[in-house]
Image (tube, rainbow, N blue to C red; front, side):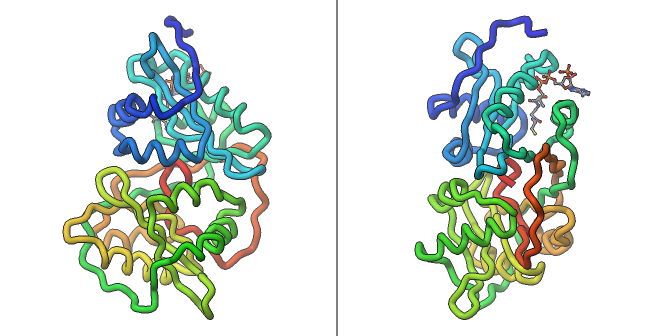
Length: 279
Ligand SMILES: CC(C)(COP(=O)(O)OP(=O)(O)OC[C@H]1O[C@@H](n2cnc3c(N)ncnc32)[C@H](O)[C@@H]1OP(=O)(O)O)[C@@H](O)C(=O)NCCC(=O)NCCS
């Protein structure tokens, strides 16, 4: 039962400082710019109590089939009183008939299960200051003309389009690419995030290709750079990431709520996430 008077309002840039405070209090590394990036591709809500932000949630409508729910936070002093559910109900209605995905913390899991989400897998978070790697000479950095192909590869690997996310990413990310006969066949995005940089998404046809891309990106990082990679546990990247000095520090549970986009057969796979919010 909500004891206090709390209203929900559309999230805008003026709420970002409060959102950063809430996510820091929850132990998340997001900077203002990281919130702004996800918000620019999403539809956000804040819970307000006397003008103060006490809750956040974003709905990222990727395409007509699929959405993600993310950045779900309730101020610690208000947890367990139904605000999380209220935010979820509002965010789900903003997703309309789309199938919804999310990456859950252990704390969020019971709430999502009650709302019909089912666990589908596990994300492992690796980070640290990497060992020096050697790049692969054939890998190059993408130019503007490669954007459409990169968005197509991402869609092929995901099973749905997320052009808005790719457009938001391209404002801060550089993309390393593997070409065959002039066509981009694999890529890795690198951008500033949290305490350092994130490498992801990585879309490739094999773990070997994904690691070649990663090593080439890491080879260009300055000495001492702090790097994070989030990957699905089943990609097999966990051990090679640890060997490179990016150790396993946390996990998240991937969840879905029907309808689920049909699985297509494709050689391309997502080996690293944009982040846990966007998958
Ligand atoms: C996850 C979080 C948003 C939940 O917010 P909340 O306001 O406490 O959630 P609610 O009070 O609405 O609880 C929602 C439901 O989950 C249930 N629930 C909550 N915690 C539970 C637990 N530990 N075990 C079992 N059920 C639990 C509640 O009973 C409630 O069910 P009901 O609506 O049928 O009564 C909040 O704990 C939080 O901000 N955590 C830190 C950030 C985080 O991890 N966010 C999730 C990111 S994926």
